[in-house]
Length: 343
Length: 235
Image: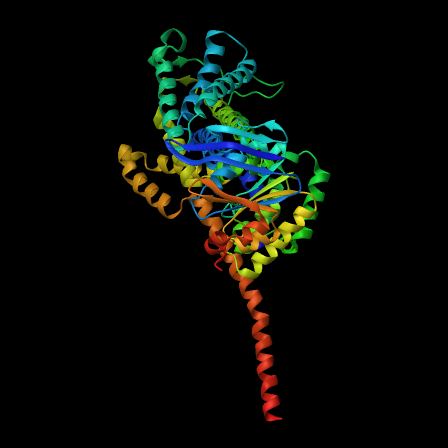
């Protein structure tokens, strides 16, 4: 039974479900919501790498998401660049800004890093909101083109867009998997554990933190660029701090510092929000307390809770397996004792 | 090999150590004795590059290393086994050891040899190589911490209170291994409160009190010193 739930099988099953999803449901609205949640997941993975694995909570994540989205928007709409050229360039722009910001941000630590990035996120939002001549300010950017066709593959329909985003999501998950299960990933975890300890085994913490930060902004930028080409209209709101907190909520609910946390958290919350749309802002009355309880009792989210429950189950089974032979042995020795006495 | 000349370290306005002079020659075991808060760990932090000296000179193999960062110090050949058996608890024993050879990460063959060597010194670690480091006993964790420091192939190894909180028998074993590591050519600087065990294997020692060195000499001299016997050996 346990074999069926092996990691590889579960991953294959999830991929199959994701691939078949648009074919199972004929509702384009569901496909739309799912595509959006895939886009968010990519952004959440970026946040997870930085906050979950390296231990640095960046609250400027939505800012980088917006940089990715606005870069592709401005390059295609205003500069008239072709889509894929603009797409790659927008990722580069996000990374370069991420590098510059990271160089300054990593002079701070822990809470101060979070506060610094919070301020920075707000500054990025203000720049987008106020720089009318470049970003069109509150009017927003309209008419961002859909992804250009690659050879015979066109991205005109909702479903083709879904598969494009799914492709990028799977790529991101694969990259994350490779990072986490390598020495690089363990280096990041070492930094999260203790920076001093990491330094005393020869890890250049500054270099590694910068790399993670740039990588995380890359994921945010990718997510933003995909968002812009999917929704085709962007306003300054996408850089607002509330988006960062949305992403953080997805991560916390799913499981911070876990590989599948972003998938679980984002899917759950996005769909739950859809279902609770009737309650409008009162939704927060439900989300708030649930999130608080979750952070208190399951600090590593749903995935963390399930995996620790699973480990406990396994160790219990092992324990029983170890105990059983000793019981048999003790039974045998009692009989032997009896024989001695009776004899 | 390593010399500290008039080193002072400050945390804000508080002076943690003052005018410390230490000389460690190649192949020696040198012990720093002192009670909690005497300045041993600050001295270690300074040598490993985590704290920067306010005054004085820190020399390693003739080069001034006052401002060298901690990760560069490891590359120069100073390996540290920090106080309190600081490990990566969620990683396995083998992963912890591999983290220790971070600076040799591209040399796969060398890591293999180093790993074999550590497993030879501590066979129990080989047995438990796939267990999480956090699940080990205190003694095993200390072995792992020493093993991890060895994985960087240090010329000089700093051991901060390796015997703290361990059973007497394990302490004896631990000092046996430390001596073995030293015999293999690694110079050792040891901070200890257990003067009896430490002085038995050390060549010389320094006694710390309130951030300064109050006494120094060969281990025989310190062993014979009445004050040291009263304060640290209890005889």
